[in-house]
Image 1 (spheres, rainbow, N blue to C red):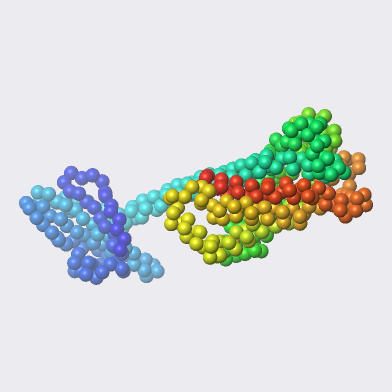
Image 2 (image 1 turned 45 degrees about the horizontal axis):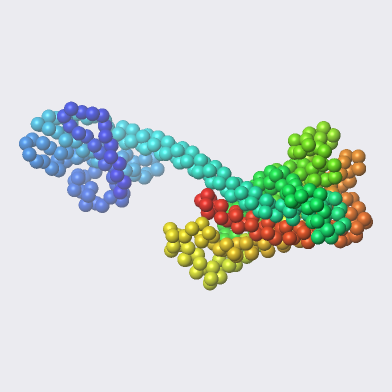
Length: 423
């Protein structure tokens, strides 16, 4: 039974109102109480009277049958006459007119509410996306600053072709540039990695959720995790590669003379054109697709395995029961230690699987137009000059850098999602 109260215009001597009844679902006793018979015309029944010449009257109308043969709702109207006036007879709108006006109003209200709901949902979605991106950006800032010295050592091996062992290289940088030399290029690195990681994390979660909806599965499959990770890596690479290229040029020999980010940008645009910012795009995509697949896939698989274990189920249940009393650290599904561990494992697996592509990409970014080669030719040249081990030059410092970087990155990301209340 649906109930919609309708008020018509103001009247001096009576107060009209109405009630919609679903004729098909309303109990027969209710209908028979109001009127002894139902038809397309109004039936007027005096149901109650009290006091001095005050009468409450009910009128019931049955909607005319539609062409389809279905019956709509009935309209029960009420009026109150005072001092014997015929006010209860004076309001003349027909049942169909009242019902039509009511339906128009309800339709207008529904459309208005729907539009407001759409606007609210879009606003909420945009805010959630912003918070999601910020969580990834903060994770990149913290992790990259922490491991900047190791990143610098890795680039010395890849970009400059350094042949010294690790301890000798550390002493040389400390002697020639001081402690701040280990953070050389870190600001540019943050400018590159903050948006890269923000887009990467957000894209992975978005792609994964869409794949689950499309497949209709209750949980994400391993295949969907790897596909979402690969797509996220490609998306972030396409958007952030120019900043990575500028950073590589700045660190390369002679990069100090270019005058920082703006100087390096102008130099590349002027001498090699805009698309020089996308040097190494193909190997970047080739490396980031499997890297993203392994990085996010491995972490998600480890996380899912734990949450489905007896210990994980118990932890989740405890979190639900004590939700109001837990701080941000305690609300992490894996807990701080396990989040760091799984992040480190995922990062090392991704780095080891795709490191040769990283070496080729860096070499492509340093090439000038006159001597530029394609990715395959560059790879062959690297092998000719240094053998297959040259494709893994700097892998050890790279793993030492990736291990804490990936661990801290995932830890800060999961922590920031809780703090920012990302849905």
